[in-house]
Image 1 (tube, rainbow, N blue to C red):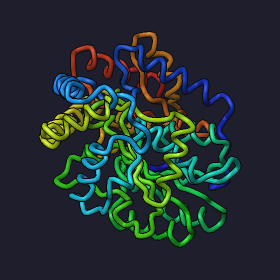
Image 2 (cartoon, protein in one colour):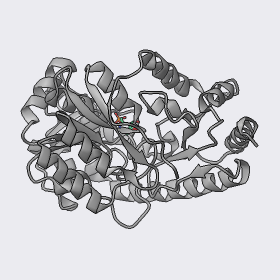
Image 3 (tube, protein in one colour):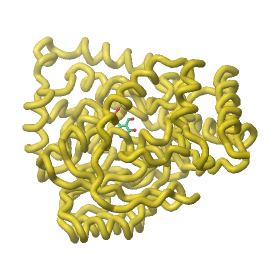
Image 4 (cartoon, rainbow, N blue to C red):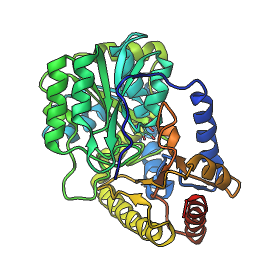
Amino acid sequence: MSAERIDSDVATIRPDYKDELFEFLKNNSQLDIALGSAFPSPHLFPIADLNRHLASAGRKSPAETVIQNMPPGNEGLRRLIAQRYITEGIAVSHQDIVLTSGAMEALNLSLEAICEPGDTVVIESPAFYGALQAVERLKLKAIEVPVDPITGLCLDSLANALADNDVKACWLMANFQNPTGVSMSDDKKKAVVELAEQHQVYLVEDDVYSELYFGEVKPAPLKLWDRSDRVLLCGSFSKSLCPGYRIGWVVNRALNEKLQKQQMISTLAGSGPIQQGVAHYLQYESYDNHLRKLRKQLAARQSAFITLIKRHFPAQTVVAQPQGGYFLWLELQQSVDTYQIYRHLCQSGISIGYGRLFSSKQQYQNCMRLNISFEQTKPLCEAIIMLGQLITDHSDN
Ligand SMILES: Cc1ncc(COP(=O)(O)O)c(C=O)c1O
């Protein structure tokens, strides 16, 4: 797939981006078939079990604990999260973890702990819109490093960006990148950490999809290769266990206290009862059994989606097949403007993640991100056929 090449100069986020993104996110929560949404289908999760554990944890806790929840957050939950990393061979203590309101808060706190307004950070291109938003909100400058849907992050561009600029941090996704779904090889992960070390740059690692792998082994985060605490590893349960509960975390020892202070002056603390409830679930249920089932369902849905796309979209459509997660990134003919297609589809209650949302400069107009986590009901299949027809109508031949 030919990734659009971009220059590595410092990007500013276009002024209308915030409003456009707000409109898109609001729309997704109201439309019937939200192929543009980043939320997984809520029907994939053990909501009844979770509710039971929330209630059980609540019954066992003295009333005082409802308000005893200052940063870094519930110790039991931090220990359980640390234990999972230890099992993967990553030396994490519960004392290295700050619990947050989803990964979004973890990522933002991380940037705030490292950067001052006016500092330069590296982000990916195409990028998760949360990264673009954070750059704008914190008044940072961004250098965009290309991510190819097949070969992933361009290591040479990253090396050049770090050599030529005073970069404070890089916001990167090593596993199942949003929006392309591509992952870094272990060799590339190691090289990225070495580059960060060489240039004394922090890595803000966005690792929210790594539990959703289709292969045999969970892909490692950049943190596995981190020998000097350069990586701030951000995760959450939003994509793997309980979307909507807003439980995330950041792992870093050296900046732990700074992260806690930053949290206290912004949101004060996470929700104690919810943290207790999730800790109770993890203690008494098999999260791994749930994950095995979830991964199987997602892999099956991905292959069913690809079959439909091959059947109903123009032959020139290029679609990579990520080895995990629940996004497909499609590249269409240059003549196709996916924003126009999005606007058309909205009238029928359907959304897509149109390409320019993932760029500071309105790139990727002919690309789109689709969320494949939904069950293939008749209305969903009809929506995909309608999308294929619209793309055909907008294509040159
Ligand atoms: C790449 C990426 N990072 C972070 C987040 C935010 O995660 P959370 O819902 O846990 O805040 C999302 C959510 O869509 C995401 O796609």
